[in-house]
Image (cartoon, rainbow, N blue to C red; front, side, top):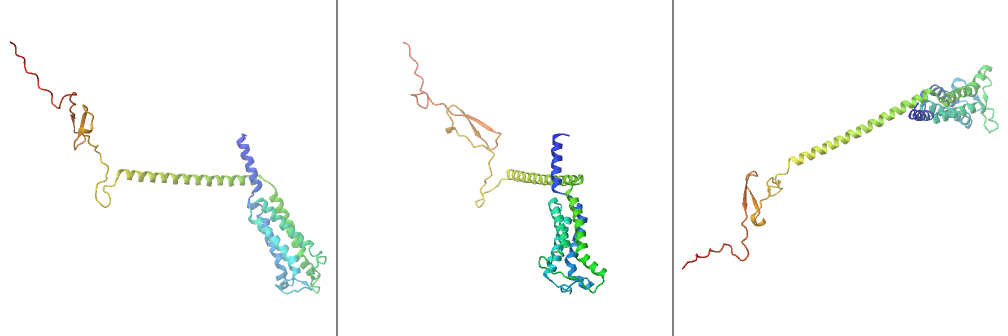
Length: 279
């Protein structure tokens, strides 16, 4: 295994420690949601099913502080923990959900025996009911529900605490998906840049092949002329050829500027001396 493969494997393992598949705690989370909802709501709808504690009010949907501390509070904690296990893909959040559910289940078990010590009075099952009915009420309100919550929370904690091969593969799939999204974004940005450059090039070509023919307002021709500016003999040095431009650029006529007379002479040369006569 090369160094790059080792580093890549370590990166996937680190990612697998932080993330996990949602299916790892989904089943336990669903059961904890159901059990938490039951624990929080049973004191309110239980009296309608002849499941109630006395001497506290046994009417349906009646709020008391004892019901809030001993039943609603742990039930809500278990419900939230189950939702974290059911929906989260973060290992830290699922661990938090498992411990929250476990604490709620433990409070359902130890809360009623400690009620008198903390100033709460949950009462007892209806004395007029049979023994089996009173036992069922105590189990369905506190002890059996708390034990079931502790069991499924422990199972969930064990499942989400272990780093398995499936977690590493899930981390690899997430990394590949993120890399594919990054490459797609880069390709889209490059395509937009190419289109922008092509549009600029086309606008430049159009402006170079279609110059403005006339100036605005006066109708004068402002197009650049292809004919060179004419040269005049007076501006050229003496004795140098002068090119005179014709209407067509290919037809040119060469003229020569007259040379300056020698110093001391006029514009025309002096007359020849008369012939001498011999005697």
